[in-house]
Image (cartoon, rainbow, N blue to C red; front, side):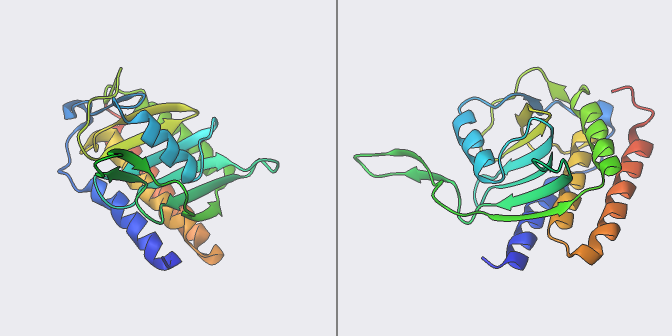
Length: 218
């Protein structure tokens, strides 16, 4: 898959998560909860590792669609340099596969593949602001104590090693995080000369989120 095509597919996947009507955060049902939904952990952990890994310091959004390739975007520190980077990963082919053979029916995780990975640097101040915003959103009433049972698509956030998973957020703070994740993907696939513009886009999204939810106690 060509890099431009894969970037567009990854962006389309994330943007598709943000098409629901706007509701106040207080009206949003908790469709995401701590941990993995039942029977998803093995698949989710394997997909996350393949699509850039898991970090104990930073944030990520993993998308496990009902069909089509899985994707992940991650903000993390580079080992050694400590530089914040955004890494966007897209599976070359769908990881989750159902083997319907009569003798060996069951789930097959196709991990013998090379995903499309792209990355870009992120200024420390912007990275810290993103972490603070995600921490507030994931500590809000939009997150349940336990991940719900899901049937089909699963989205999974992480923050500093803690995981929160469930259904597609259709409103509130968590929906705003999906918007920010899409902007991070766009940054990861941008040329160097576009980075400053992408940083400004993310800052504006954070400002907009602050203005929208600053009066909500959550």
